[in-house]
Length: 337
Image: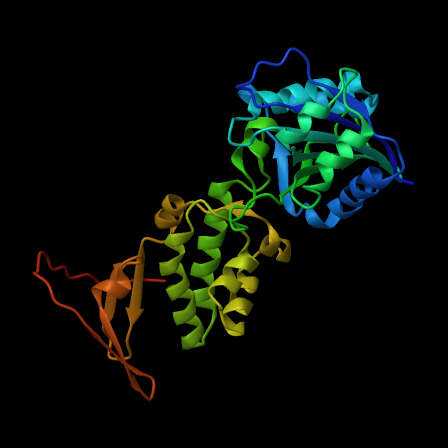
């Protein structure tokens, strides 16, 4: 049995004054354990967002929350788990409300594994909590109402000295799956960020789209890619992968093949990041259409379809029309390769 211990804490929002955070050991058996064991076992699949602890100031390889995780993993107990609960409390505002924090530790071969999970608690049941602290019966009653609505982060490594820098997370409480993770869970509480930064992921997406347009000889694929680039501005702040981007805009297979060919590694297709529209606009500023007549049409990528009226004439022919006031003209020599 990989799970070797579970500790839980009742965590109030930081707006409420609490003298002490109540905690309890969860027995390794019974209804509550079965549910938590399921969270532990499914974490490998459900925690699908790669995160990593932030580096300290001036590039120092140190992170306070990672230190708390290492202290707990080294000697799991209510004493070593309590600082993690206090850190969660300091990051929890009134909107998140009361919650139950579970620290689920186990052994997977040579690796130690920790799943940190938070479930919403029911204020109405709190009046029944005894002075002796949390009871298993109390926990089950609170937990049963929210068994499928929780946040979790999983960390697994063999080394307590150099490991536990990276983890994976999920937020099953969000109504909008495109957001991926609530800010307070990953940043304020875990002092982490997406493993692929927003800027880096957005630049990679932009570079892949630009390269794919050049790579594919398929005119329909080119059009699908450029159209997706124009519509991408509506994704600002959303969590996404390259694969999800292709699915969202229903890119045809030739376009997908060209994008895959432009990447250094297929792993990049599933790396998650937060889309940054400003960075994307810096990387893809203009869209140019070249016709077989020698005409080249250029406009801001996000405004191209508004600047030009586009009419499909059939037989592969397209009519572009626009109007405006001439504000400048230029002549230039043919660009060299």
